[in-house]
Length: 418
Length: 124
Image (cartoon, rainbow over all chains, first blue to last red; front, side, top):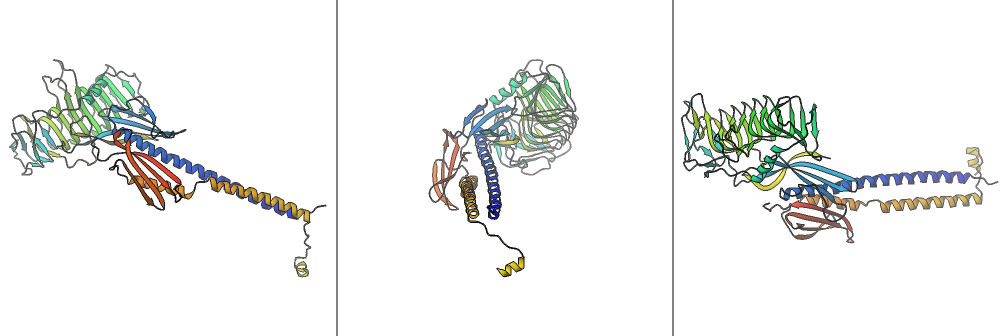
């Protein structure tokens, strides 16, 4: 008979050692797996940043179709790049792929402002001076007609602003406004003839920029949008009037219609383009980066006046512009209401009508100014208007459409990421 | 022995020679296996040096402003020899390809990092 007291002890010790070894193996496995995950994520992030830099440094025409390639030829650094035109801006989608792991980012791209061209005011030289009255303030560089700038007595009010009239450099303007970018205009103009699905809109619609653009086409039937939430890669198109109620929430949506009516109290971020008119009610808030633009490439004798009207106490954070390819009998006009605030840029191909207490933090490019009281219409008068380009955020980015933009591109907004 | 016997009040049996030999063989085998596992794990797991080298490269990349193109630089940071090469990417004069490599004392490559940066002074 063999007694086995020592064997019992050995087996217990062996079991303990086995347990320690297996836990060591498990810890090493999880540590390694977790580190590899982090390392891969870091590598994907670096590749994603590289992809973003490629999109920011290449011309607008590049990567209009989704392109996949290896960044450094290592085999584990594939990225896909895609650039879409999104109104006056571009949207870039970058995906970084390593084996089965993918991360992506969607962002809008805008141009930085060219400080050499930037001005608080650019009014074309129409062989007449610009007149200031009331508590008008112009802060920033101003391109003025050769006839200069002067004070005036309007509505029983004398000029009550800074004695320098322009707090900034006074430069001489040309007979014509610096032109808008024609290639961007033609891209925008193409969207007026886009055909889409006649979708029945539910309570909300959210479309990722990774997917094809969701085009909602209202064709030639006037339509009123109510109680809706629209977000992302959505384009609304109408051949006639489209009404947007204040109950509609819009986030990065673009609208192309013949005429657009925005009801009182609307709040959102969107780009609205019309060929005839945009009428915005009182107390509407358009957050950055929004855009209201008139683009008219065909003018007939019966064409109504191209006009953007913004109701009283409204605010637009972004761009407001009018453009007509062939000048009509009635020139395009932008009309601001009382106590309106524009933070960004106004480009009026012809007239900009301002009312009392309008505030513009940014820049105005206009052929002429209009001011109308009960009895008289004044041309090239600025009355009780605050125009200050220094109040605009230093991080403000413009669109390549506008003449003051530089070629340098930056990320305007992160749209989506995963 | 008599004292212990008195205290415990119990007789301790000695193991036989065969039992001790078998036990020794088992314990040696178990220890061998344990040592093999431990060696494998320490050999295969990531060294702290590699992780540190990766972190050093990551922090270095943040301070590269993209103003210098076509440059090669070697420096020693935290005991690692860092090679930094900057060149234009795929013929694009606005993009710089930054390649960072970290070596240990034996010139063994520990970590590598590639990224594209926009050249700061390009007018774009």
